[in-house]
Amino acid sequence: MDLYDKSPFMGTVDPGVEGAVCKNPARDFKGQRLNTSPWLSAQELVAKEWLIPGDLIEIERHAGIFWLFGGRGGLGQYSHWAVYVGKSNDGQPMVIHRTGDKNEKAKAKIRLGNFYEVAKKCICSINNYHDDRDRIYPPSEIVKRAKSKIGSEGYHLAFSNCEHFSMWCRYGYTHSGQVEATLNSVRGRSS
Image 1 (cartoon, rainbow, N blue to C red):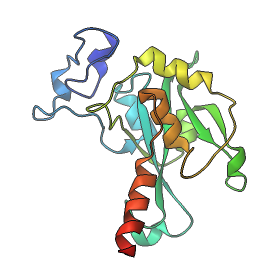
Image 2: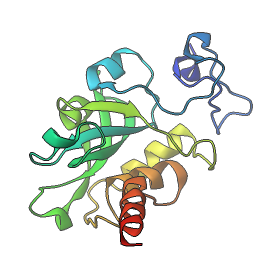
Image 3: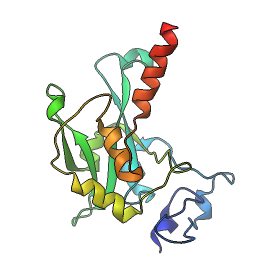
Image 4: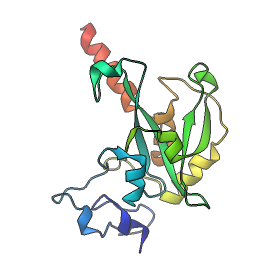
């Protein structure tokens, strides 16, 4: 079975292979091309066999007690991002992500980790949300780019967070939709 036969995204093209398109009609969602998956546990996402090395994974997190009042997308909810890099020799799903001690974020590092341990009990989604509008590196190049940064240190909420890193690996530039949404929200309140 070709790697792209497992893709959950009908019509997703492998940029490294001329004309390679997802061939699994069960993943066709009413004829729409999808670049994101439903929110599932890490175990469910892996069991679906949808993950392709190079996919970006968004992991829902909650900060402190604030999530109790906001629900999904509410106050205190944010996303952690990682790049899926495949399975280890013992079959464990692996990701590369920017992470560190919450008390010393400036010393955060790019690390290789077990997807189940990184996700903890949080829900996750494959989220390649810029695939429709941007150039995408081939899966092997995305993984190579992620691996090349393992051990790199540094963090800045607005300019160098886990989403910035993941976007750079897949698309070649840094961007954080969370930061952009927060800035737009603040601008909207101040006008």
